Image (cartoon, rainbow, N blue to C red):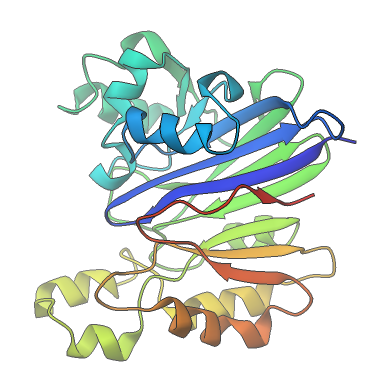
Length: 269
């Protein structure tokens, strides 16, 4: 049975990018992999991959969650220098084709993520299915990713939880979920009232408490790992996010992802 490994290169408003791969158990060679979002530079991505014995050939596609800059900042460079298919919904592809950071580079790499069905993003090995989440971008999606029989779900930049998101997380072996802010830190912090209202208004970001309640709702016997993503630099700490969700994690491991640095290459299975 292939092992499944996960790595976060950056998780926060400074940039977002994640790697998910299937590996041969004996040789530890990557058999198939994908990136989720493109918020770090190709140079940094190459360096971080090499630190784990990986390279650009170890992923075959890039999945985009939405068109905010911290998730697509380097997508144009990815297309130009790495040349992998870019999977996004029809609505997001239209927006990316108009965006100043991507419109000239993405044309030859567009792959439509059809909604409501599984998409064969790495034929025969990795399938992905998107679900819409509330956030103030052109469109924002989470992903359920199936690697052989391993189920991985990621939902970042989600202003409020939905039944569909909870349903996919309730079937997953691993869930990556936003735990963006502590309400009291946000209230007392440096952000303007308008920005505070945007963050907590249902189409902004998920608080630590909302994340914890979501975990309580979707936790199930087969859940093995929970990662807290997109923590705010000014309105949260890893300790606060972890402490809020820990009572609801059950038997699953729980860990906040680093904001600006890379995580280790984590063995999920």
